[in-house]
Image (cartoon, rainbow, N blue to C red):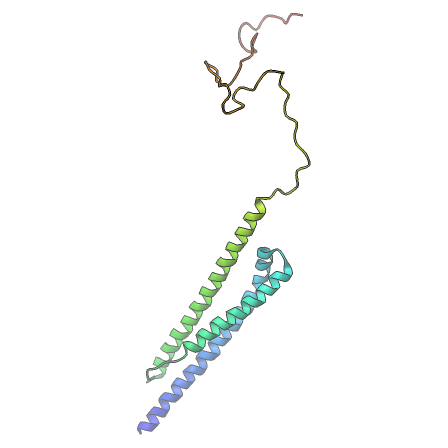
Length: 184
């Protein structure tokens, strides 16, 4: 009777392993295909070259399979006895839940790393002018012997009530009587 009970435990455990492997491998393949298909557009934006994006996409898929299937096989072992179908289902849900968490963590790590690479690449491109300069703008001419106030760090600084520079002299528009006709 004891051998029969031990055989039943093995069957439940074996079926738990078979279901775990089928669900985990199926999820891994489905997620890898979805990420590969939908991530291609993102990778083309990140790398700005279609050929490089395709190569990186294939490498990411291979790495994804290796990491996730490696985790699935390592996490498959259950050392304790499985006494009932309900205990097998609980253990199975725990194992599949961990596989899903690993899949999600790998996905978010990839998106984070590639997004960071893209931001750095865009930042580097932004420091360069979009077009090469053609020439220089002409500098305003100043009368001989004069100097712009405050143009040089050690030069003369404006003083008085109007620190902005020299003020115009003569009649100001809007100041004084306005009924005088202009003279010629």
